[in-house]
Length: 181
Image (cartoon, one colour):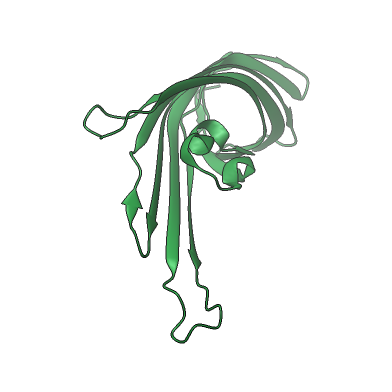
């Protein structure tokens, strides 16, 4: 059988860089990521992925003051783009895979209102050894899960007035659906 390609989706949290500058509770948000599983052979898969979110909220208060107080808006944007490479072992309808993922991460936060401020953009990188399993429901559809040990690092650019650097190690789980043509 030749290479197989199809779309997929992974549901997982987006807490890699979100908690660095944010005082918001969006760190535990589940956001779907789009996968493109490419089974190069029966024993090897590469899997580009992209995911992200944008959250904007506006606070308006009147407090009984004529004309009210000015409103303020906060916006958060997160982007993850990367790929994975995995060795596959199949038996009957179950496939176990193991390998790793690498990704570029980008987080931005801004506030506007009576005083506007754009925080420095935080680019980051991530590497994660991963293992997962999936159940083949049909020749075209698979359902599974994956666990990772994530190593993430970030550093703002040297052109910003303040520098933010850091790293984290965390575990991550995801539920995955893959479709094949």
